[in-house]
Amino acid sequence: MARRNSISFAALLILTLLGAAWVIPLLWTFATAFRPANQSVAVGALISTDWTLENFARAWSYAPFGQYYLNTTILVVGILAMQLVTTTLAAFVFARMEFPGRNLIFLLFLLQLMVPAEALAVPNYITMRKLGLIDTHLAMMLPYVASAFGTFLLRQTFRQVPRELEEAAVIDGCGPLQTLWHVFIPLARPTLVAYGLVSVSYHWNNFFWPMVVTNTPENRPLTVGLALFAKAVEGGSDWALVTAGTVIVILPLLVLFLVFQRQFISSFMHSGIK
Amino acid sequence: MLAPALVLLLVFTIYPMFAAGYMSLFQINMATRQQMVWAGFANYQQLFASPLFRQVMKNTFVFAFGTVPFSIGLAMYLAVQLNRRFRGSALFRTIFFYPTVIPMMSAATIWLFMYTPQYGVVNRLLVLFGFGELNLLGNSATALPAIMLMTVWKDAGYFMLFYLAGLQNLPAELYEAAELDGASPWAQFRRLTLPLLMPTTLFVTTVSLINSFKTVDQLFLMTAGGPNNATNLLLYHLYEQAFSFYDRGVAAALTVILVVILMILAIIQNQWVDKRIHYN
Image 1: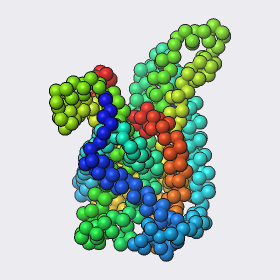
Image 2 (image 1 turned 90 degrees about the vertical axis):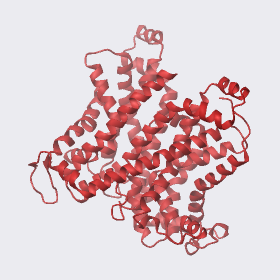
Image 3 (image 1 turned 180 degrees about the vertical axis):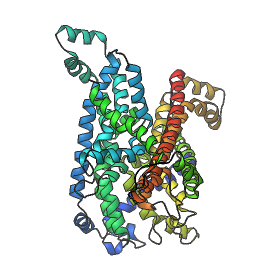
Image 4 (image 1 turned 45 degrees about the horizontal axis):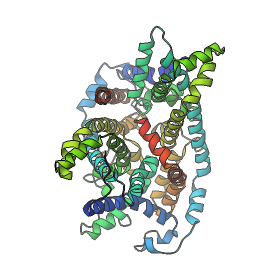
C-alpha cells in the first residue's frame, strides 16, 4: 500500500493523546521508583528533582530478586534448549518422512496448538505431584517442551529446503540426524532465532503455571516473585517500593527491546501466536 | 526421532485432557480427604445451577467481548495512522508496542499503582475532571471495566503489529485508482482498507478471544476475583476451585468447559486462516 507521508493535525492530536495514555503509566512508575519514598505521592512528583536509588536497595533486600532472576533464567534457557531438540526432530519427521499413523500424530500436535498448558493446570499439577516434581524447575518447564507451535513453524521452514541438498548429504554418507544437523538446521537459522525470541519472551513473562507448581522462593520465577512482593508491600501502600520492584523486573526487558526492536517485532509477527 | 516430543505431548497435553474429563465425573474433594465417588454429571449440574458459576461465565463473556472489539479497533486505527512515515511515527510504534514485551504481572503492578485511590494517576484525572474519588478496583461496578482497560493497554500494540503487516500487503494500485476517482480518505478506508484487512481482522479476533478466555494473571494481584466476584473469570475460578476450595471434581469439570471453549475458537480460527491463505 502506498504510504502517504503526511498526517492530518487531528490524527496527530489523537495519536499524541493515546501515546500519552500509553507512556504515562511507565514514566510515572519510573519517576516514583527513583523518588525518595516520602515524595512518591506528592502532586509535583514528576517535576521534583530529588533522585535516589534507595528504593531499589530496599526492594532488593525485601525480596530475593537475585534468586528470582536466576530461576527465570534457568527456566527460559532450559525450556528453549529442550524445545529446540524436541521440535527440530519432530519438525524434520513431519517435513520429510512418511510412516503409518503420521496424520493421526499430526492431529495430536494440532490439538496442543488449540489447548494451552494453562487450561490443563489441574490435571498437570496432579501428574507433577505423582512424579514428585512439585516445586522444581523441571515441573515449570515440562508441559511446554513439546511445542506444537515450534514444530509447525520449523516444519514449514524445513519443507522449503531443496531436495538436492538433502540428497547430496545422503550421498556424502550422512544419516538422517547428520543431514538434519548439517543441512536443515543451518538453513533454518532465521526461523530458529525468531522462535527462540518468542519462546524466551513468552516464558520470561509467564506467570500462571509457574505459580501453580512452585511454592518456595528458591524455585519461583520473577513474575511470581513480583506478584508476591507487590501483594506483601501493597498493604502499606509503599509505592516507591512496589515501583522499584517493577522496574527491577522490566528494565532489562525494555532495554533489550529498544536495542533489538526490529528483531523483536519481526519475530512476533512471524509467530502469529505467542 | 519423534519420540521425545510425542511422549511429552501425550503426557502433558493429551492425557490431561482425558484425565480432566474422567475426573469431572467424580466427587473429589481434597479438603475432606474423601475417596473418589462416582458422580455422573453432578459436578456439571452443580456448576450450571450455581449463581457464582453463572456470574463467572457472564464476567468472562463481558470481558472477552468488551476487550476484543476495543483492542482490535484501536489496533487497526493505530496501524492505519502509523503505516505512514512521518516525524515521530517510529517513536509512536515503540510507545504502543512496548507493553507487549513486559510481563502481564508487571503491567498489573503498574496499573494497580495507576488505580490506587488518592495517589493514582487515574484517580487524579477523575478528580481533575470533577468525577471525585473512586476506588476503581474496589467497586464491583467499575472493577471489571478497570481490568479490561489495562488489558486493552497491554494488548493493542501486539494486534497493531498484525495490521501493520496486513497493510504492507495491500496493492498500491488500488489506492492510486481510488485517488484518481477522487475517493475521500474515509471512503478509501471503508471501501478498500477495511474489507481488504478482513482476513487479518478475523485472525486477530480469534487470537484475542482465545487470550481473553484464558486471562488470569492480572486478577491474582489486582482484585483476586473481587469485589464480590465482580472480576472472577473462568480460569481464576478454576484455580480457586482446585487450589483454594480443593474441589478437584468441579475444577476438572471447569477444565473441560474451558478446553471446549478454546477448541471451538481454535477450530473457527483454522477455518478462517485457511480462507486467508486462499485469499493470497
